[in-house]
Length: 294
Image 1 (cartoon, rainbow, N blue to C red):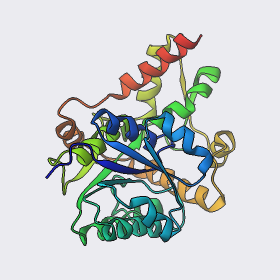
Image 2: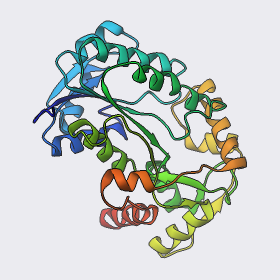
Image 3: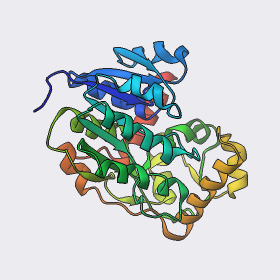
Image 4: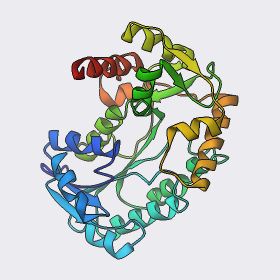
């Protein structure tokens, strides 16, 4: 039986991707309880639409038990490249199970069984834990996030170069996480995606050559494709990761260099009931936002 106004705990509610889930849930009349580690982020959570805030730590089981008390659903996404990501995810599944939570949506990763990649392998124990519960779970396998392009956009505009540390001909499946957020909200407020495991990709697999062609057309000036070494790229990107996390990321890009990243839009289209947001549309939106800000 569906709950008219479910309360959903959202992990990562103040983050750049999981934060997109909150307004989608609110749009479907859900009450959002944001899980924040730092109480200073409570106001930020409320600004994106959370009506409740729980302070907790994914490494502290007691805090998770308090956070899930009385909720109907949980949206979980693990911290990127954390060495104990699997343990944190399993702890959340166990806390939700003990609390009698009805629905659980896990934002995993495309190709989680590609265990040569540590950030993929870390999702497998969490998925396995869900299979041994009576919760209505939905497991999401998103491709590479288009939001990563947004992070690079200021540099693209300033220097006229879009760089990634793998060959410009490598083709990757990508997805706009706004579509992933919508699927998550559907799963948490409706029954039709219960027990589904869904690969989530936009149409097509695109190389960096394809991407800079789109950028050039939308900006009205040429954008070239850079191909730095991983070390050169990392020095420019200045990501908030330690050496171990950067090593994990380097292996991901080495995999892309050899194999790309495959994906298919069929299940995303079916889950949304509409066409997924396109890479072209995402780039156009970035260009329009820049023009409006000028």
